[in-house]
Length: 195
Image (tube, rainbow, N blue to C red):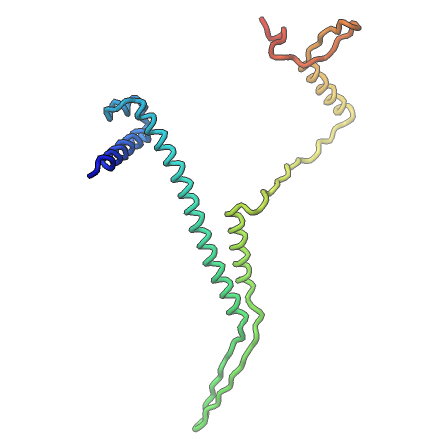
C-alpha cells in the first residue's frame, strides 16, 4: 500500500475514533489521552469532522428532498393518467341469446372526467411548491380579544398610570439656561445607577 494511502486511512480511522468519543461526551483532553495524541490534533480533527457532518447533512437533505420530489412527480403523472382515463367513453355490451340466435347490443356513454384526479394533481403541485419554497410565507394576523370597556373614570386612571410610569422611566435634570427641569432618558452611567 502506498504511504500516502496508508496515512489517509490512519487519519480516517483516528477521526472515526475521535468522533465516537466526542459523541459520547468526552472532552478534547480526555480523547487525546485515550488515543495517545495531542489535544491540538483532536481539535483539528473535530473541526474537520464537524465540516464533514455539515456537508453530509446538506447532501442528505438535498437527496431526501429530491426523492420526495420524484415521488410527487410519479403521483402527479398517475393522477393525470387517471384523469385522461376518466374522460374516455365507457362501453357496455349486452348479449342476449334466444334459441339459435344471439343478439349483441353495444352502448357507449361519454364521461366528463372524475374531479378527484384533478384534486390529486393540485395537491401534488401545492406540496412541490411548499417543498421548494416558491410561495411567500403566510402572514398570520394577531388575534385580538374583545375590547375592554372602560368607564370614563377608569380610562382616565389608566392614562394617569401610563403617564406616571413614563415619568418614573425618565430622570429630571435642571436646565441651566432657563432654570426649568428637563426630562431626559437615564443613561447607563447616570448618577442614579452609581453608589
